[in-house]
Image 1 (cartoon, helix red, strand yellow):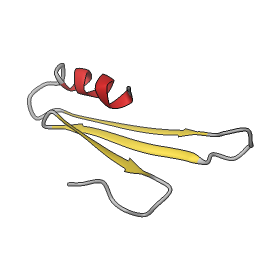
Image 2: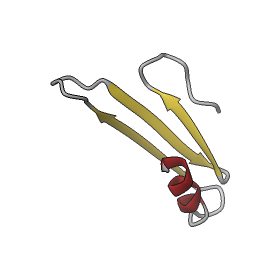
Image 3: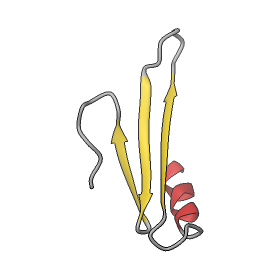
Length: 58
């Protein structure tokens, strides 16, 4: 569902525009355990799980 929504948002960005979204949440504990990053670039939705050091695609 998130990817579908972000693809819709991508259609409304200016040419060469970029949107970077970072989120953090938790499940039944006090410390963030869910962290994600989405980047919309050139009409494409890129995704990274921030629990690992892997960079998002350039």
